[in-house]
Image (cartoon, rainbow, N blue to C red; front, side, top):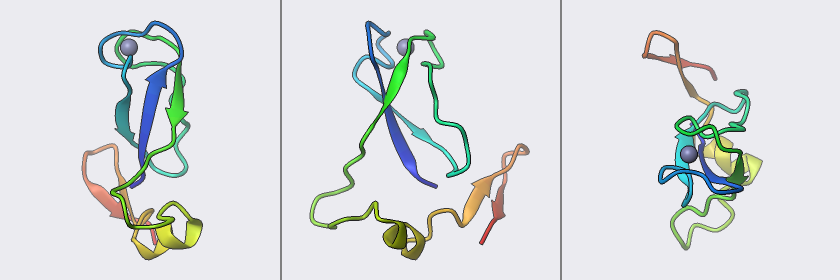
Length: 81
Ligand SMILES: [Zn+2]
């Protein structure tokens, strides 16, 4: 599941001011507000560990197994691919 980082566009709270991470499925709607204080947030590009190259390309995401498991409402995981 891809990892996204969100950061407050304005003041924000201690949770979102410096950015926070959120795991979301590809089909989930991106967050627009901080879950704690409700401040507007924007998605920040995530840099994975250095030296891995362009890990965010579509092909790479697929080859690394992203999108394969999706968290269900019951808290388990369901294979999607
Ligand atoms: Zn906040």
